[in-house]
Length: 206
Length: 199
Image (cartoon, rainbow over all chains, first blue to last red):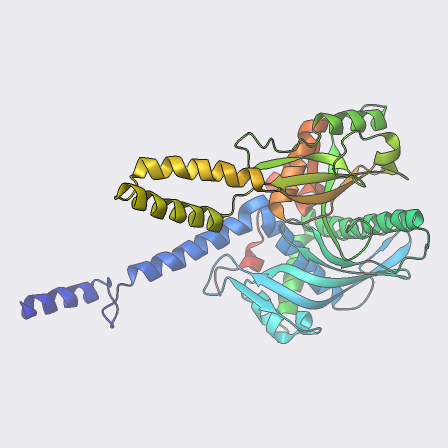
């Protein structure tokens, strides 16, 4: 009986059904496949991949500290300044979270980007004229999250509300302006010939 | 009230579709149509949702004074939930089972337990007060930007669907895809060089 059992176990091991510890490996494989399928689904859902390309492009553009563009003739500066989530739809690592004010421009992040983990969500600071907005953006919905608006100047409750609504609209408009600038570059022929090679070169600076 | 103070969370949309000339009247009428109606305690409903005035979440008149502020329309999406606490239901059922066994000399059957569970559920439900949550919404009448001042996807999608149905318009999320014409968007595919094939 023992001989038969041993032969059965050996056969299962050789077929890859169990590991060296005699435990089934099928479940582990299913789990990994499930995780990968979820990562791929998340990438395609609502064209999240375009959002990830956009945030990655923005991270690259912002490193120089020059204004990304002008909005109503005032320069708009962007600095990534905190938590960053990177995601991939293939490979062993499907998500990485990094914390630290300088983390977004670190060598580690560039290396991860070069390996296909693109920016999925990021905390950033937008400076437009004298107004400073801090918030998080995510690649799937482009919701403005945990935003700190510039200090209100008005004192009356009704005026404060109007000013706050205007500032929230401004935060949204500035986000739209950045997205529109990305979309313009993304749709141009130079995206494949110039922008992507430059992005890859920047990612390779490690 | 995040619209007045605190950190801001915005789900952002742009209103698309034909809008009547009298925007104010149209908004008042549309929101009124999908106004919040409380849960009927006699029904089996566990949830109710609809639009309410911003400053008074039990009102659905949407008078001009209550709805409009500067160039914005301000209102809210109210969600009420009525949930019978499972612990209380379980404890009540256990107490009843013990009393039943003492009286009849046997444990209650599956059907008897089921019937008692329904009775208990109804009694507990009558004592419950619904949990109310209110999510603010602003519509910029000039730019047609619509903000739901929340980012929880369930409530954002529900409020979006509620607005689209009440106003017969489409709310387009402000994501990169919305900045491209449909044909241009269909022609785009993920940049292979960036996504790679694995890490």
